[in-house]
Image (cartoon, rainbow, N blue to C red; front, side, top):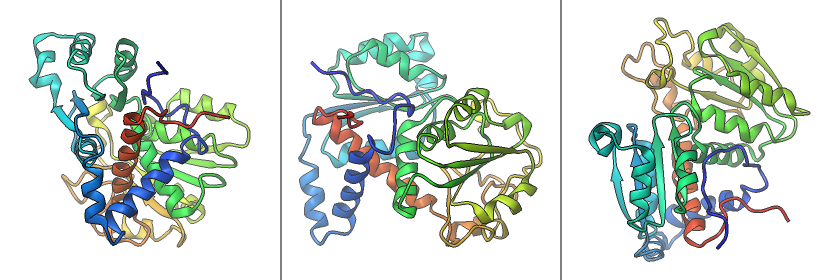
Length: 331
């Protein structure tokens, strides 16, 4: 029996070993949305893995990630069982540990478990205990590797490359798990430069800076004020913005200076793209990290980005159901 195809961290991801998933995700989007026979294509896909089963264990609230995984599973004809906010409403609220839960679920003989956990290391712990493939759907402020698949696919699709880029990250860089996973990927691509714009309380964690310092050809600069955007955005290829992750322990910003307005987005060159892993905090539109009018900006690609995450998850699930490694092995 081969190695179990867990997806726990984006650390092993490279532009090369992700190529099969990239290619298949793009092909799936075309087959389902652009091909003349797209309805028949959907029907055929929905017969592919009838009888296979997925369990979605979500200890934290989720909308996009949970729904996209459920729809990806349904698109292949898989059965699924989902628990949402399991920390509050399941055996966890009765004192059962994650170890006990995943060991019990393994006895139900699922083909894959999708796990969102509220503490760093939850997915790695689960993967160490069971032989069912574990897909990390976010572990506290740790990582979100399948999101990084969709993020990097969007960059490749829109710009044609993952190297020789200038990437500006803005917002909560310390508690934002999607940033960590995406930096793991883009830092292994040649000649990339990163600008990190945040506050001292939400600045990049030391382990990521140590990683970047260790890599030849990779450069970065930290900025602690939004005024840096007038300098960096005209040279930026990818502008990646996140909300403040107060649900992960980030401090509340009483005055959110790190906002993207129409004028901010206009600083980007015509070829650049604006990404956001979502959700965008619109509880107070005047303080939202992305102003509502930016949704229709020609640089905005965050809706396309969300769709690419769905197709990336479809491609990942297909490889697991076919018994293939998620990442292509080096020759």
